Image (cartoon, rainbow, N blue to C red):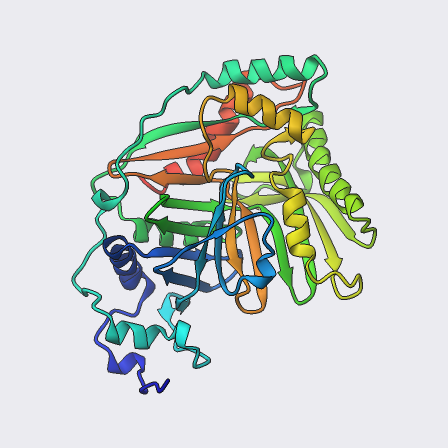
Length: 399
């Protein structure tokens, strides 16, 4: 296929992220495309991809073999996820659209902009989002925490991670592209993402928790647990954690180590726990890494993904006992909250995150999701307050 020399100077179209993102979202919603926009932690690059044919992704699949794109998977392991292939790819560096480095026909952003009927006057309209759903079966969260404590005290589990939804109205001035950019600026240590598919609607979030990362033959995952509000200027080395929070974090670390043991992998590095900042919160984090070349394990990412999801940090310990309790008592389907999402096979790396600090967008409201780790030492009102703090991550940016 022959390409004309299309450059930023030869097309009449806004090329800044703040101008183009809303129009690409509007185009996707009008034409039944699937879209993913994201920025990984610490990066100055924002990427947006579109496809007209999103595909199923199952946990039994190996993401190393599906090509370049973005995976969006629900909490429920029995349900398929969605793979948004990078058929059309836009790379923004420091907010400005960049020319392609290679002549890959699937990623010629400027060529695509110059040939497709993208209405340059179109604006994002939140009325195009799915109609609001009715929240049925929701339970009182403090009562759910108390029920979880009794379940633990009776010896059925060590930890349960119940969650809840808060429905909030979207202001008339809400703009998803502006909100996405605001999250990028305020949450540099999180995966900031917006995902839209005609089937699953629109999801926006800022997640700090890596589930699986593969880059330069190095596998990484983390144990992240314990939550405190972050105060500007605080010395992280002097932050005090309760015994409950320390034990909760240790459970998540043990869960990861047990996953390594299941595949007889002993050559891993462990660093932590240490206190880290994630937006307006602080957590305890332990890093785990594996040299995939030295261990001769090229598909370690997919193997560990199947073992890790859902982690004890979002479900509980032991996994099956905690999951059964949540299915019977939580009162709603989590859908993509505490699922996983992220780019795969792009720039020779893959980064999948647990879908935390997220919300689902509807025509006139948003559903905010948050959970808290419950142990025998938990206090229901404290766990409810923790979910409120977590929801504030997104509540603050939607006004």
